[in-house]
Length: 342
Image (spheres, rainbow, N blue to C red):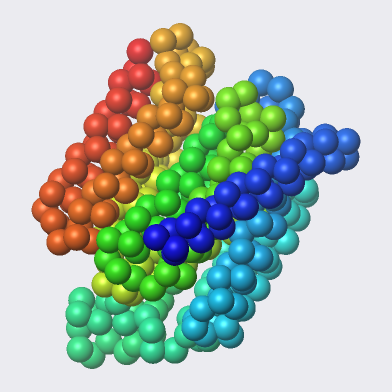
């Protein structure tokens, strides 16, 4: 009960701080004309300040540092993780302002992840039972690193309408706390999830349709990085099915969209508007489509089901959890596809 109260206080503090900083950023970014201006691929019609992720990261990183200081976690490892998040945020802020080559962004992500894995030796044997005996340890780490990079970028890809990325980050953060409680994991896992959720909710108050501010790459890239780290920690603790279920909608939408575009021989590295959630939006020849809020609400509802499914797997009800989670995502994808077809 005392731990739950402490987590509630932490979450509430992160919500309040993120809310206040985001509100300040709206004026500062607008005054300095740091705006996301509509183009052919946009889902908004008027310029909106971009860079709200500054508030999320400004709240989440100190909160994680506080959690580490109050726990028995290896401070050096978490310091490297936080430094990597800060470095990616700074690089992404430059990308928001002036744009940067894809190779530079991916290269920076790869370097950060390689440093993190190096600072945590012997911890990343999650694929040991899958890889052949002759495979050296670095092969598994390379596969996990590529998966982490994919998660970082798919989180960025899925940040395309009001409320969706903030809602996803909040859902995964809450889900991590729930799974940690059910599985009896160490409290820092839950605390870091609560901190991310609180920071995301504070931002989401200003990002819900009609959004007064956007996350920007300065938020979506380090958020994907931090959430990816937490999901890897969850998997390392033995809860790899829960780590798969919590972000399952984002994983499914981004991956299936990539495969569809590749099958059509499109240039998959170029920006587009063909994700399931984007095709479901009203407009662009879809008069009966859904609003941003309607799409985001459906995603969040599905994420709540995924949290329950992940908790079920953590409690030992694996078949129930998997069928519930995959079924919920399949239903959502069908709903979004039908809305886009109207």
